Length: 224
Image (cartoon, rainbow, N blue to C red):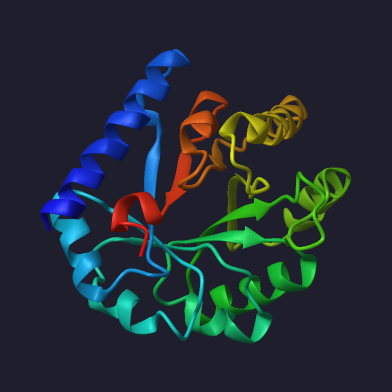
């Protein structure tokens, strides 16, 4: 608990310093604690420290973790297969990885079945890496126009993963590009307030470039 508390304080301080450096309020930034390598006990302790948003990227493998802590906001941050949507809908508040129309259609269908709405972010592969999922920047505008037809989806923003680099400054152009894409669509009348970008190795740079959500696992849970 002491190590986790220390890590949490450091991350919060880093986020506050990055926000102030960019002339932003730290209140604009949400910490999404990534639970991939965390235990149920780790997650409960993080919640006791004040973490209210958790991110999981494996549906069935992390089901027990999600069920163990129902009073927080769970974000699905992994690649989502259509046949797993029915498991995500009842327990997650946000899907951060909407990346194709077939998935949007299935989320809409399940939301109608459960008589609910769900917040989604559209994943954009800004770097163009073949190993990453997401729409290309050129595909984003047409996709948003088509996805607007799914009234159960509350499209609130964009998400990206920058290349893993030793120097966080090398990730800055990718974060800036996502913000520019958001602003371009806002100019066209589509509000996308959320930008989910930045992880353990580059989250301060992401905040400086406009992140409203950062997805952090190792820096919190001791690099497990």
